[in-house]
Structures are given as structure tokens and as C-alpha cells.
Image (cartoon, rainbow, N blue to C red):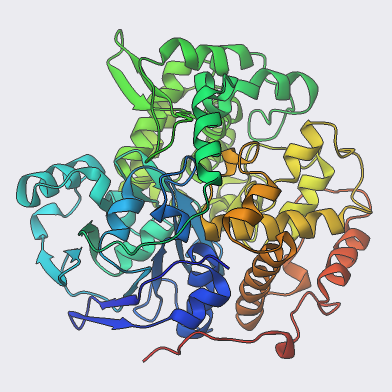
Length: 554
């Protein structure tokens, strides 16, 4: 099976050491990306680790397709013990980082320990350098990029960075690359903040050669020639359809339909788009550089999840207000979903829906943990009682836009996902929106859910963009990786199982699988899911089912 190549580079920022370890067996078994990082994390992060402690480790990993020139491959994976969910979490980001990362010759970067001063770690094909940067304390993401450009002559495509939110240990702080692309969910920016790592740069010419089948040429050509609405409106293109036919959660989940959906949806975003935007080597170019000259706003996006979290969920019906919130989160380094939902919870507590100016003020306070921002920085699960609102989270993670109260298969996915209320963990929503799966009911959907989870886990290991499914079909995916499709799903299944087993050892079990709202037959559907996976009735993975090929931590 095609897999990533190159050693694991362990950087201990406390000891100021860098060690390379051959992990060929891990890569042969787990391909790369999320799967390889999960296997390493399972063996090398103590099960009782503090997410903010030096024993937590953060993994940045690439897959074999990042060594190709194929569209839909400009992405990377990041994995760590999450400060938001208290379990193992992976997230991925697009942009232009992956080829520069591969140029250093490594397949996985592991950040360990805790620095006694704020540092930037510079990784090249020649070695690792540590730069103390006390002057960047409190710096925004663009300010970090400006520093790297001035001192190293490297653009933001060579860099991951955190903003004030990460430094201040906001539990949903993101790790940013290319200034506007986020490793968003799970608060991994706070993990870097706890280690006093402000940024990591990558530069080199040591990318290994990988023989990728010629199917990549067909994918690239079709991506360039397609005329999808996604190219014009990104993920916001379905906003009005979802609002009119399913649910667009509104005013902190009080409503299912937003009267101003058209004012913040795809056409509104397209009117503000001023040029094409893409990720590395991708001809699909679905990104959304937008600006509003009248109010002096320029950003990339917003995508649909931000339209929901800072739009309908807050009762805000002006696309420029949503653009401003989007840019603020990118600049400060926060996940727009969790940040927007948390601010919406605050607006609910203050009966202040629709107050976009207050929302931006509170968003900034969260990043600096000022006033009420200190409580909100903990996320909805930890502050909902203080606010007097319902806890709309699963495993501590705030809900994505796709409403499980209407899409019951997606609701089941939220309930059992190791990562919590995240829409990308399985993507049942796409089947239900398309009419391929009846959105009513949870029973009988477990087998489909398992396959979707396994596919998503492999996709994040390859690594292939989620928006490339119409082009990188199942048949093409198998050809690309020179394997049977079922073998690819098996890699995904092992990944999901390792995540679950790690979380089990931290105390997670069936009591953590559920939703804050009622769904028909949910408990029986959860049991169907466990049976399909071969797990115990209490939601735990049998120890005998978990095999490791990853080297233990030193």
C-alpha cells in the first residue's frame, strides 16, 4: 500500500533536543496523516496526561499524496490530547504548508515537553533551530508571519503559528497556517501555547520520491474543468437549501430556520469574493478571498460553518459582520465554530441576539481571557451553568451547523464520535441532505456510520481533501494507494479504534456517548454501533483488539 516515508522528528522544546526515529513499520501499517499520528499518540502520550502538561505531545503529519501534484492534496493533519474534549483529537488544515513540510524530509513532527520561554522552532532538512521570541508575546497570527518573513525570509506558507488565544490557553484555540487556514477543532492551539511554542517553520529540499499512479492526472484535469457552485461560493452554497429544507440552527438553537439566511448565504458571499483562492497544487480553487471596501474588511471566507456560528446562531444577518468575526478569529487564532457557538451562548444569556458589535467585543475578550472572556474561553460545556443556558456540546465540543435534531443519522454520528460534535468525523449529513439516506430515525444506520467513519479516517491519513470525493472516487482512491478499497477502510477502522481505546483509558465510556437533545431510539442505535464495531456494551474497546507498531516514548 502506498504510504508516507521519512522519519519521526521529535522536538523536545524543554530540553532543546531534536531526535529522528525511523517509523517505517508505523507508516506501512497506518499510511500517514491522522492514522500514523494516532498510532504514535496512543503509545507515546500517557493515558493520564494533562492536556496542558509537558507530557502531552502534538503531532503534525503528512501523507503520501502530499508528495504528488494532484488536486485535493494540499492538506495536513494535527493530533494531540485535546484541552476541549479531554480526549485524543485530530484536525486538518489546507493551504500551502504540506509541500514545505515534506521538503524537510520527515513524515511526522512530534512536539514534546514545555519551554521555559516563548520560542519558534525552525525545522529544515539540515536540522532544528530554537529561536527565543519574548517580543512576540501576545502577537497576532499575522504579526508572527511578519516576524518570520523579516527574520527568515519565509512566507506564511512555511509556518504554523498560534495567536493570543493559544498563548492564553483558550480551550478552542486553533493552530493557523498561511494566516487564514486553521487546524481548528479541539483546541490544539492551546496545546502549543502550553508548550510556549509560538510557531514552527519548515524549509528544505529533501522531499522523498513517491511513485503515485497516473490517476492523479485525471483528477487534476477534471478539477480544473469542473463548474461546481463550490468553486464560486465554497461551502456556503447550500445555506439557503439547508435553511429551507432541513435546519439552520438559529439563536443558540432556539430556532430551526433563520429569516436572514439569504443575506449571509452563498450568493452574499460570492458578491464579496474578489479573486480565486486555492490550496497547494489544487485546480479546484474553492477558497473564498472576500472583501468589503466600505467597512474595510478583507478575509478568507466565511465558510458555511462560520456563517452558522457567527450568523444564524447569533441572530446576525449581515454578511460583513460575519466576515469581520471570521477575520477576528483567524487573527487571534480561534476555531470559528466553537468560538461562535460560545459567543452565541453568551448572547442568549444576555438576551442580546443580533448584536454583532457585542459579539466581536466578546470574541476578543475570550482570546485575552478578559472579564467574561475568561469563563467563555473554557467553552460551553464548562461555562453553561454560569450563563444559565443549555449545554449544546458532545464530549465538550460545540456543535457544527448540521442539526442532528433533524438529521438523525448525523445526530447519531455526533453521539458516538470520538471527537464529539464535529461534522467531519463521518459526514452522515451529506447522505441525508442528498436523499440517499432517510434523515428520520437512528436505527439501522450503524453500519453506514461505521463505513463513513472509517472512510473519513483513511481520507485524513492519505491525505485527501473532503471536497474531492466526486473526483477522487472510491475506485480511484484504491488505485492511488495500490490496495483494495476494503484494505483502506481497515486502516480507518484501526484509527478509530485506537482513538476510542485511548479515550477509554482516560475514563470515557458509554455514558459519554449521547446528545443534549432526544433522538428516536438513540440508545438502541448506539448499541447497534458498538455491535458493528465489535466493542463492549459499555462503549469500550477490548484491550486484546488493540495492537501497536508504534515505538514507545523515550
